[in-house]
Structure formats: structure tokens, C-alpha cells
Length: 463
Image 1 (cartoon, rainbow, N blue to C red):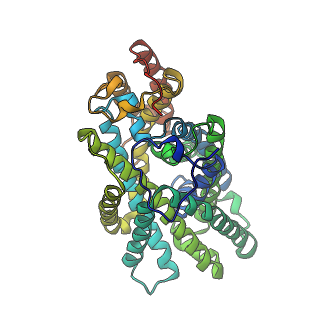
Image 2: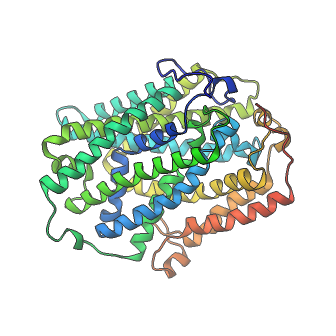
Image 3: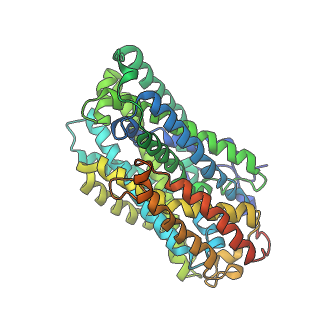
């Protein structure tokens, strides 16, 4: 039973603090639309194109690797969804329950950097996409316009972002169907389409890793969009709604990107989409660009809450409100916009290196967080302790969590394979990157054993 109604036209009053029970609202199906609608955008299409342009896979190889990576990665992403209704706080605040009040600062700061990076990536693509249908307007002006729309949605907050994604579920979904239909049945595919490129293990598993990372990269803010849900929402409904929303919303546009990647000779997926869809391109690109602004708002919203979390760690009596969120959003947007304007000309190279780097620092965090929540504490945390400088029952530092996090990054290094570095084991595997699999499989049991040995008893859920 919902206690309050959605209010997208009002500025959200809450920031990082626990959402009171009588202000919870929403249904599990809202988690499907927030993840489905926000994923159908140009950045997802460009990411899917990596399968055929960078990893040189055939279309069938792209289908297999994209589907496998997203199906596996989304398990970890969706498991975080149940934490929101249970605890009512943002994901990074809840991280204090594993790492301690000060120990969590490192992880939270990395998340801020990560989402500013995604913000910049999306701003670039949004501006470039609009420029293909409005070449008479300076590209930097269009990039700035996408940034402006994003920051406005962030200032209004949680409910407006949910409504935005709900509308995009229909608009972007129809645009995606139109793309596939136009390219396949009107433009047509070459006779040798299925034989273009081929299979190579390094490319296949490389794309599996990209798909898994795409999902795992959402983990630091999944509960930010489920924390308003009623406490009795249930773990299974929250999991499956988030899981299928994010899998379907990611796989379908990625497959479109892989398709376009095989049909363009210069690797320019954005221009290729415009060319291949002919007169329909105007509506399609406009919708996907609007979608980018929605995803930007989601990234920025998480970055803002995480930034406030860092500051509140050292100023525990500070009660950040909507003004603090708005000011922080403007600051982070300015930084992201500066990065976007600087990197626009070398976007694809910068973006590929960026997402590969993220994988290695996110994997051990998600392993620690999920093991602690589901296997060690079974969802029982003293929420009041999250907001004290001393860390309450969790202390300022959890040595076991910090050790496992750093150990998880180090243990992946020999298995890393990318343009920046290739580890010795990855070389022996012919360039196949399985670092994220190794990180999860090793960190999870190690943390479980250490956490059980030095467990902090939960005081109980503060509601």
C-alpha cells in the first residue's frame, strides 16, 4: 500500500537520508521502466557497435556475446535493487555498512568520478547525434543543451526522472523498432551480411566483459531509484523488474549498434544511424538524444548524492537539502561539460579505455556489498549508524572490506587485457579478458569468511 503519490512537478526534498515509511511510493513495475527506458539511447547503441567495429565479431557472434554479458552482469545489478526498499537510503550511503564511515569514502569518490565520466560521454554523444540532423547548429551548443536538460531533471529529482524514463519506455521502444524495421526491410542488408567478420575468442569474451560491465556499472546507484519503494515491496519483484528492464533495455539497442557497425565503413555509428534510416532519422535521433538526457540525469543524480555523502562523512551534523543537491548538480555538470567539450574529437577511443578501466574497480565493490547484504547480515543494518562520523556499530574502517576491495583490484591485474595493459595470464589466454570473473569468484568467498569471523552484530533496522 502506497502512502504518498508521485510528484514529478515538485522539487524533491530528500537527499541522502532515509526515506520515511509514510513517504514511500511506487510499484515494482516502475523499476522495469526506469531501467528499460533509460537504456535505449545512443550510448548503448555505440557500446553495442564495439562488438563488430573494435572486437571484429560477426553479427551472430555479437548476439551471443552481448546477450551473455548482459544476462550475467544484470544479476549483480538487480540484486542491489532490493536494498532500496529494505533500507530506504542511497546505495553509497549503505556502503558505509560494509566499509565503515571513512573507509567508504574511497569507493564513493571513485563512483563520483565514474558517473561524471558517463555524464561527459553521454553529453558528447547527445550533441553529436543532434548535429547529424541539425548540421547548421554548432556541435558545442548542442552538447551544452543536452547538459542543461540533464541538470534540470536532476534538480527536480527522483520522481521526475522516473516519469521521464516511463515516457521514454514507449517513445524509445518505438524508435528502436522503427530503426530495425527501416534498416532491415527498407534500406536492406548486403547478401554477405552474416559472413562479415567472424569469431575470435578474445573479441567474444571482450564483448562479454563490456556487456557485464554495462550492467555492473549501474550497481552503485540501483537502490537510489528503489529507495522510495514501500518497505514491503519484496526482494523478488524488485529484482526481476530491474533485471529484465535493464537486460532488454540494453541488449536490444546494443544489437542495433552491432548491426550498424557492420554496415558502416568508417566506424561512425552516429552518422551511420542517420544515413541508414533516411527520412526517419530526424525523429529517431531526436528521441534517442532525449533519452541520453534522461540517462544523464540518472548519472548526475547519483553523482550528486555520492558527492553529498562524501562531504557529510566529515560534517555529520550537516543536513543537505534540495539547494545543496541543486548546487552540487550544477558543479558536477560544469565539470562533465568541460570534459565533453575537450574529448569530443577522440570520443570512441577515450570511451573504450574508460569503460574497461571501470570494470576492475567496480567488481570487488559489488562482490563485497552483495555478500555482506545477503549472506552476512541478511539485510539487517542499523541505518542510524550510517550517518555518524564514528560509523556507529560499523566503525570508521572495516579492514576486511577494504582489504578485499584492494585485493580484488590487484588479483585482476594478471588477467587484464586492453589497449592500456595486457597481463601475463591474459597473454597466455590469447588476449581473453576474464579479470572480472576472477575478481568476483575470489573476492566473494574471501570476504564472506573474513566478515563471518569478525562480524558486527546488527542493532536492527532503523525505520
